[in-house]
Length: 377
Image 1 (tube, rainbow, N blue to C red):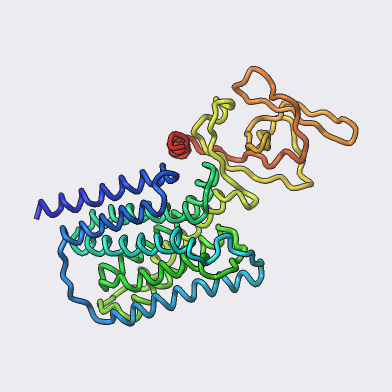
Image 2: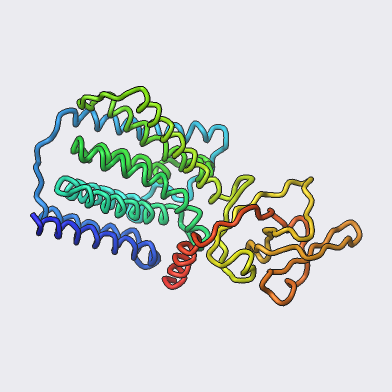
């Protein structure tokens, strides 16, 4: 029994290590290579971990249910597209897209779900949590490739949105495997919600934030439907417990949406990680700042700590002086820890927002990953 646990831990930690390498060195470990390695890994695991092949009841119904939700997901995306518009898909359905995108993703998803089932049905609560982490990393690999990311900023924009919806989806997948031993439905659902952009020639022009919110909500709805229809457990829950559970779910949903909105920087409030020491003493390297965008009628005052754009980079410095030159107001800025003012001046169109809040230390993870990406290039 102990040797089985050790074997499971080795399998899961190997997966996590491989997925981390695939994220960092994604220009080397392409989707085709990931698919081949994962396929080989899956074949090896099926030989190492033998599971009970018996099926539970309602397997076919659950498969149809998950397939229906996959179709519903795509329908919602395209209904929204009617209001926000469409664009021609950058990757058309062809032999090239089959070889470079569709087939690799099919292999990755099928292999991953077979591995998930083998490990979860043999594992404990701890191994299930580790597998959850591994599959979240795999989602990151998939979406990094889907969005063809080029810069570190692109990585964080996508990963910030992907991680929350990935947690929700993989909790659902684990639940379906453990309780219903069904991976066919999961595979169909995952393929439908990922590959539609390569099959349908037009794609809704939906900002990734909103698609991530949909991806966050749908698995929760699926879970509720499965519990209501197929769960045979006796449930004696007091009204107070129901209310408490509803309140917790609402609070968690609000927190997740707020975090994603802040990271997206597409709304009035946004978040930035400080990567330099130019404001040390006031805002340190590794801090995260929350900013509020300026409206046209808002005034920029001397002493304000602002976010402005210089050479396509967002800078957080303090306004130390401003001068009227004709019809233009010129703002002069400086980092609190710098000896000299910044070169040149800013105008109102350069200034994005005013800093409202500093959260210390928690941005160091972002900086670390940033450095890892730079090393991987």
